[in-house]
Length: 84
View 1 (tube, rainbow, N blue to C red):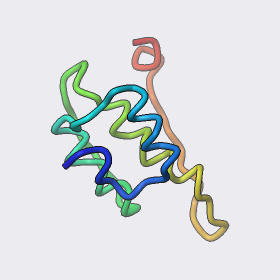
View 2 (tube, helix red, strand yellow):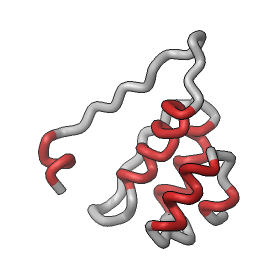
View 3 (cartoon, rainbow, N blue to C red):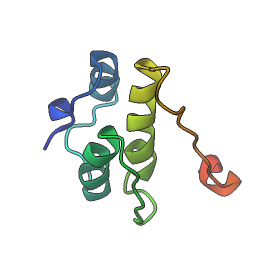
């Protein structure tokens, strides 16, 4: 799977291209498709493996295509994670 294969808005695909991301890491390829289906995901991976993109990409997709019948995504992260 490549990032270009994901069912996401073209704006997001373009941002990924500009960041020069090509192939998702294991945590990304396993979690992003599930999250895009609206399912909950719990994953762990070492620092530097792309967890931030793994949870932010589906979140950004939801913000770009909001629906009134769906709950609004809420992201909780520790201060340490945000500082890295």
